[in-house]
Length: 163
Image (cartoon, rainbow, N blue to C red):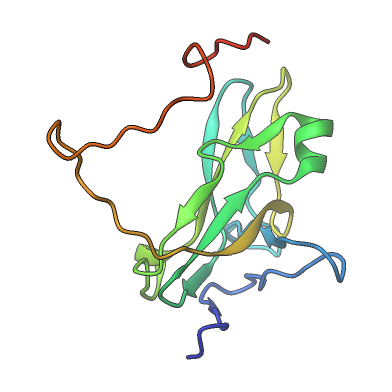
C-alpha cells in the first residue's frame, strides 16, 4: 500500500464507499448502514431523541497508512438544518485501528442538539471523513532545570480576551 492510499472495505451488504460530493471537497461523505428488517426489503430506522446520541454503523473498515489519520467531522447541512453533530468532533481514526469486520467497523457518534427527534435511514449521508497527514514531532519532558521559557507576547490566560 502506498503512502497516499487508504484501503476501504465495505464488509456489510449494502454499505457504501465514501465519496466526495464535489471535485474540490475536502471531505468524503460517509453513509449510514442500517440492518435489514426481517421478512422484507425495508431497513431499520435509527431514532435519535433530542439531547441524545447514537453510534451509527457504516459497514466499513479502513486501512490507513502510517503517518496519517482520518478525521470524522459533521456535515454542515445536517448541523445547520437539523442540529445534528458528531459528538467527539473531530473523531480520529488512527492508522493502527486496522482490522476486518465489526470489531474494526467505522462508527459515527451522532448527537442531536435539536428539539425534535432525528431519524437515520440506510444510506443517509451522516458525516464526512477528512484525511490528514501527521507531522513528525518529538515531545520533550521539561523540568525546572532544563526549561527555557520564552517571553509571552500576551497578558492573561485562557479566555482573557472575552467573547
